[in-house]
Length: 170
Image 1 (cartoon, rainbow, N blue to C red):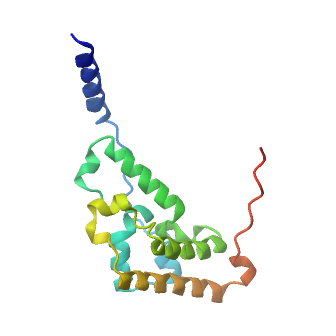
Image 2 (cartoon, rainbow, N blue to C red):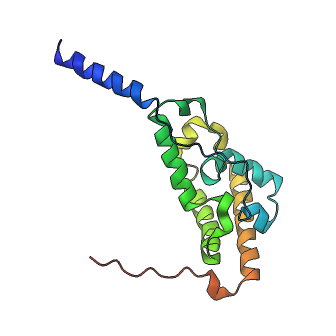
Image 3 (cartoon, rainbow, N blue to C red):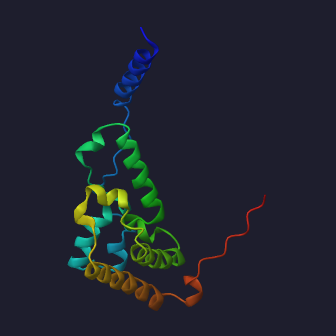
């Protein structure tokens, strides 16, 4: 048997074997006490629609999975996106961190959308309905700013400042 046939068989065998190993799905019906809705009130319907289409799959504890999530290594790739997204901003657990972090996350949300960093291009390839119009972006900015205004009205200014990280030692 030629070497390239052996290599092809090994690759095919590896692809078959990895189909049996999937990450846990990010799907929860439990609404946490720290969910943004529980802390800052209901989300306006138009903003909720935007979040469901363009944000929630990676920024909540409840991802809608496409059919191709059942194929490896795609499931690992998607899981990595979800875990990274939740690490940066998780609406399902939004109020678990410090007030300064919550305040900053809403500003980060605005900046990421304005700069075109969110939704990710790789997400938009498949989810064309997640492409935000200028009007939708404005609604999202207004909602984020309303959350920031609520936080600012409720807490002293010095609690809204993220502490400086000490310089890393080499």
